[in-house]
Structures are given as C-alpha cells and as structure tokens.
Length: 114
Length: 109
Image (cartoon, rainbow over all chains, first blue to last red; front, side):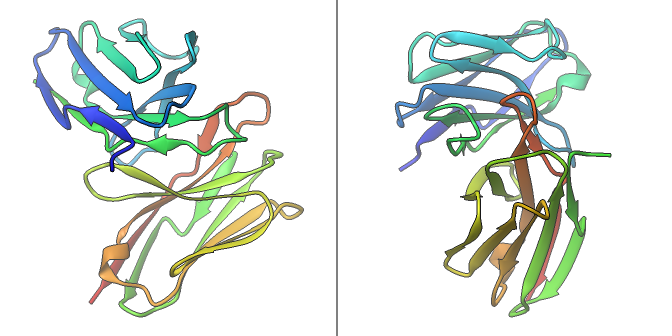
C-alpha cells in the first residue's frame, strides 16, 4: 500500500499560472519535506514541516509556498511558475528529524511549464 | 568539492554481474542513506546504516565510519536493477540531507 502519495503524477501549467501540488501520507509521520529535482541533478530541499513548524531553506524562492493543514497532508503552491520551475517535485516524510529517521519518498510530481 | 561524492557516475553491466557503487563523504555523520530512483522519478529508500553491513535480498550496503566510505553492492544483477542509485548524508551543521550526484546503472540482458 502506498504510504506517501503525490497528486497529480504529472502536471502541466502555463507560465505564470498558479499551481498546487499535493502530498499525503498514511504513516502519521511528524516531518514532511518538499524537494525539487531537475534533470540529472540531486534533489534540492525547498522546505519542511516538523509538525506545524515550517522551515524554509534560505535559497528557496518566494514563489514557492507550502501549507500543512493537518498531519496527513502537505501542499506545495507555486504562485507564478516560470520556465525554470519545470522539474520533478518530491515529497518525503520521516517520523522524526534526519539523521535519526529514514525518509520515505513519494513517487513525485513532474511539472511542465509551457 | 561536494560533501558527498559517488563513483562511478555511470555504470553498465551484463545481467548477472556483481555491481559495486561507492560513496565517500567529508561530513561527520551518524548514518547514511542509500536511495534508488527509477526512470519516472520515484525514490525508494534502500538502506539507512550507521555501521557495518546491511543486506536485503541481492543488495548489500557497507559503511566504514572511520574512512568515511560506504559501498552498495548488487549481486546477480538484473535489468530491473537499472536505476539511479544515490547516497545521502546529513549536513554537518543542519538536519539537511546532502545528496550525492548519483550513479546511473544500466544492466543489459
């Protein structure tokens, strides 16, 4: 059974048109992460939530926002997508903070910006 | 210089061959992750290890904390093992996970 679910798997949006990516988990984990991965590159952490505490990476553009309305769900909002935002977006969860706990990854959402 | 480095970057093998992928890190860590990413994107956590060796099926991971080196071995490789294998370690001063550059493995029948 899928433990970290991402929807949609593929998302196409237009330049400047807001888009929301969704992540849900059945693990009841405290921590949820959002990563951006561009072609042939390592995943790059955008932000993470420890419970309701939001932790933004210093180099994450303001264009990227996140919401975690409850333990199970976390959303990534891209307010005005640019061509450079086309990437795979990966959600992950862990029971506690790394490095004590394994991160469980979702299947990813591939975003295309036209 | 990346804090986590992998070698080789690309690896091709014939089905049945023994595969070794290496990971060296410069940060002081208490545990290291090996991850597998198939074409299409999803990442699967293979191992998290802090010492010695772990085995799961045909996969074996070893780590030497003193030498700051880890290896992932695949025995009797199969075309379905074709994927990118990534090692990841925590940053020395934050909780952030630092990813290696990945090793792209292709196993041919």
